[in-house]
Amino acid sequence: MKTSLETLEGLARLLTVDLPIDTFNQKTDKILQKMASQVNIDGFRKGKVPVSVVRKRFGGNASSDAINEIVNETLTNALTQVKATPVAQPVISKVDSEDEKIFSYTVEFEVFPEIKVADFSELAIGQTKVEITKADEQKTLDGLKEQLTEYKAVKRNSKTGDRLSIDFKGLIDGETFEGGEAKGSKIVLGKGSMIKGFEEGLMDATPSSELVLNLTFPKDYHMDKLAGKAVTFKININEVASPKEPKLDEVFAKKFGEKDMEALKVSMKAQMKVEIDGRIGHLNKNAIFDALSEANQFDVPQSSIDNEAQNLLKEMKERMQQQGLSAQDEIFASAFNDEAQRRVKLGLLVNQISSDNKLSASMKQIDAKLQEMSQTYGEDTQKMIDFYNQNPRRKSSIELLVVEKMVQDLILDKAKVTFKQKKFQEITQ
Image (cartoon, rainbow, N blue to C red; front, side):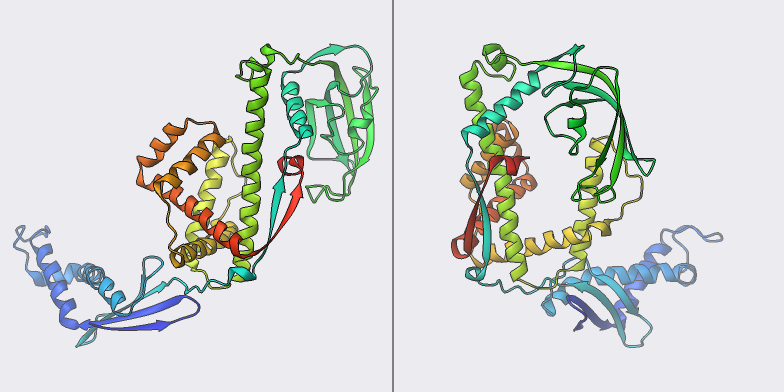
């Protein structure tokens, strides 16, 4: 067997394998002989069809089967000979079986990039810190109170804290815009859930009244087509309801699964910490990996990007299905290419760093990660540990998370790190 490897653009490679033509001819003859013993052809008894007849009728199929078998039998050794490791299954691009002496085939594939990780000490990374204050705890408790607040319809004019039931229609240039119309919408005055001027315009309103508000969407509004636009809202006040806040007692605590207020506050603080730790962890992780990615430039295998983009598309469709949504237009995997490329690149970097530094996850670290996850999702710790340890693939996914965190810590230990203090509400809202 003779092999030659050609480097194409980027990570693409072209491997040509030459074999004696007898290899192909003998393989083809063997396939034809097997066919001759199995096929049914008019005028011949089964198993008695001459090979020459089979060759005439099925020669093309036999040649294709022979080519596939030869490639399957020789490709691994050929790749070893040229010291190449494909990212994905090589694709046959050319076959020559007409030469009198040589049978050859050519396959194309991508290889993994050679990565020399940049010095961590040259990285400048910003990290976020948050301290949970008494005011944050009070705001969270107020949120729990709001969940159990009851509202009773009243005949008086509206004021801050009242909940209004309204029908409204928003018009821009005389036309209703998407999402600008609703019936029976509930709005608590003073919450700031609508654009500036909307709730203010509903103050001192009477039940069954009609209002017209001329407002302007903020220039930084999240929907670009509405940002900075003048809008007229036509509003019908269906009901004004006054709040009745619950008492902070054992009855209140038990509705949230705790025996008394002291236990509820302890549980609430613990959950606040879990939530903020998770969000800060995500922010800080992105900051670390963004800096790492920027400092390390290399080609990323397109086949890996395509596979990851398909995974992202599948995940999005599953989320939409779970939420009862369906895409109005067809969505293509290529729409996720940027995020897919980022993920693949970071995966290659993490793998290289963990290999260079001989990082691996111990069972103790894996169990600790599962315990952390169980607290985040409110699951039984031992059940979660058993669930992941019973399946090698599930367990492997946790190992990757642990190693990824080890890589983050290694980078932070050597990089130029600056910390920025932020408020709890900035991160959680």
